[in-house]
Length: 429
Image 1 (cartoon, rainbow, N blue to C red):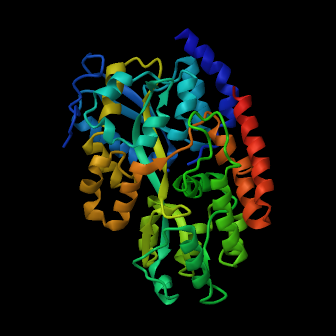
Image 2: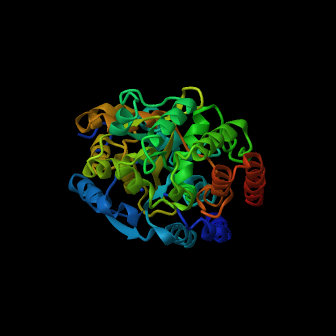
């Protein structure tokens, strides 16, 4: 315990830099009888969650409390200082028993010693192999598991079926390659001066790790090495994706508002009915439906026909130093169960279990099912410095994208971003 607190205290300077977070019937042991260590689960536990989860977290805890001996109490923490607050609390031994954590921070907290090793619990789950692969990867550090998947979000390409039809495109055959994307964008742009083929948030780092990186993954590339220790922002696959966006901008298919969009204009532009395509998450479906846009959802294409998605969301962890390990593990396990995942899906989360997607999403329509299926092929960059590289709106990632798309010197922008990203990785040790 003392060693853990020393490691966390030493890490708090880095946590300050991470504070701008990115970001949203029981079937196997949901009875609440025991944690992985075999101790009876009872007593009380405390849970922390960000204010972005305020709309559902208290209700989820109430659902758990109805049928479990363990009784949980949730505290909502402002997202702006959540990472620093959790790190500080864990280092002093005053943290919660359980916390929901943006999955991109899981490697950092695990490396800092803030999370309990729950490998035994993870390995005991009959549905372990059905859990989101990307969530599982980011929950692992040095071969041990420190969290379980909790909430999820995927990214896909939304397209306006009415505009496709008006432009002479088949609304039942959305683009599957870069060439098809560019062709569709040009045809929609040709409908008139106030029509645009495509938009994205050109000044939002977190938006583009969610929405742009899938192009790279689908084309066989990556933005970081598997272990997160080498940046690959200068790869040909990144260059190809940047060239696609640059070409669409040169064609006039991207509205000028995209250049400075920090994430506030993308949805309004699309729901105006004047934009043909934009990449977003499942969270946008209710907004599209309310706006009465005749939209479709399709996987984000790679260069030659493959597809991919970002796997976003949260993992749920037992915090190091918990005074009720059995109770904490009981809640963490239940959070992956069918009852919890069905509830979370009704509040906007994509199920973290591929074996539940069809059952949970069948009543909700094809758009939701696309997102559910994408969780099985989703990726997330694995890095202890994910935030300064990708989410920081002044960081190397978004500067590379913005300079490439709206400036044109793709090779130069890549070289600058590669150097800056690798420096951040090296400085982190």
